[in-house]
Image (cartoon, rainbow, N blue to C red; front, top):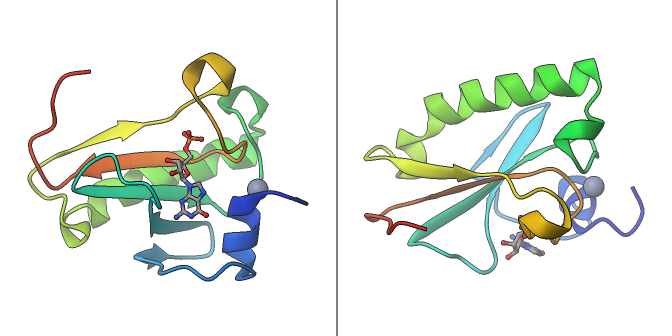
Length: 111
Ligand code: 5GP
Ligand code: ZN
């Protein structure tokens, strides 16, 4: 997708350190961390919203969560973490390519 920063990162047009990668997803660190550890887990397929997912993308997101559960310890999130998906204007979504925030590495406050 043109002008999508995450598609550019996935395509390697913008360099990034990948903490996990397979054929469906990448995990990178957020450029503006909101916690001691702040990762973004990004499906390689471009779609913006949960409401836009087709069946294949829904399966990718399902597997994404299974993988997050498995790789959390190797990301330094073994003591727990918070999962956030911002959706649309009111949800504060600034990048319109679906992504899952993983926050941890410390005791997080309430929000
Ligand atoms: P949203 O607000 O859409 O849920 O989250 C987008 C996130 O992407 C923000 O937390 C922002 O800091 C992060 N971000 C935006 N541009 C880049 C980038 O070029 N590289 C990385 N690693 N993170 C980015
Ligand atoms: Zn994209």
